[in-house]
Image 1 (cartoon, rainbow, N blue to C red):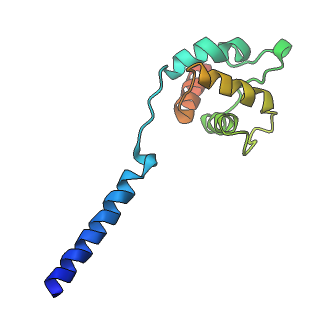
Image 2 (image 1 turned 180 degrees about the vertical axis):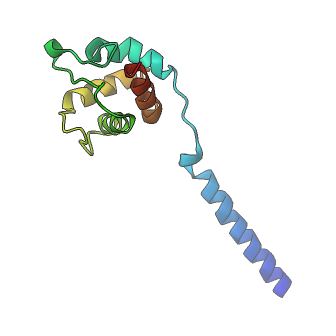
Length: 123
């Protein structure tokens, strides 16, 4: 009886463990169709410039005065509905544009893009 109860308990623990692992989406790595360099060169550069200085005529903010961490937070805000508004800039227009860019295949990993931009602007 004790052996049978132990087997049932062990089976229940295994089921819970395996079902928890199967449902864990954070362990999955998302793949993107373009590199961060391709995304920036093909979409971002039009408004923010090759050196991240922004364009006054388009009223786009400069990005080359931010740290990699600040860029990461700004990109996170833009991709997630401006939840934190960390930079104090208005993200509504870019938030709208970001969804269009994602639909066209210009999605990216926020941390990787921030590191790419910071490294590119500091050269």
